[in-house]
Length: 236
Image (cartoon, rainbow, N blue to C red):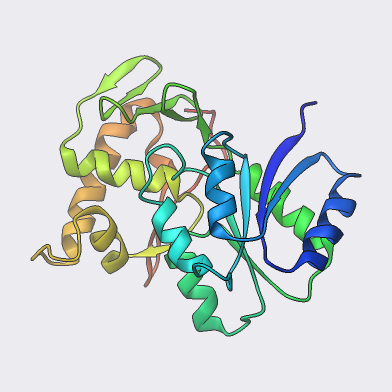
């Protein structure tokens, strides 16, 4: 089995050395960078399977870098685990809202981090070399901004496409209606938070003939999540 490539962005040499040694015994190949400038050089020539990102870095904060790469078409889908000494809940939320897939605080054990990495990598989203996102048989073509299931084209509106794209790249996380509005329609959109309910109802209706509507879960009194897997049904 080919090793998964990890990019560790961490300015503490002791942590880089510890993980390089520990992960040599795992199914991971570790590339490390001491700052954002070094990390960008790595990303210009190689796309890792996952990034381990420190919060405090000498040339840019991890949060700023995370927001930056989430806007870069070729690397915005890379899973990111935040690594930091900031244990306060508000900082964890800030990291997750900014696009992190998981969060681990220092001090930590390499074993715990390895488990977190495996969990994130198991979540199931596949990005093909031609920029198609695939989950089961749902395929999102990010070049043409089209969606198909089992090679059948879905006729989605622009906002339905944006919502499904966001869900697939942020699966297994709960989002409030306001958060979904911000991510899908933009902060400046003058609409009710119930607009998301209508949009989700329409998207579910278009996914239902393919039995894929059950990926979209309603979380009572909170909002919605897009589940990579669901029980008691075959793959979509």
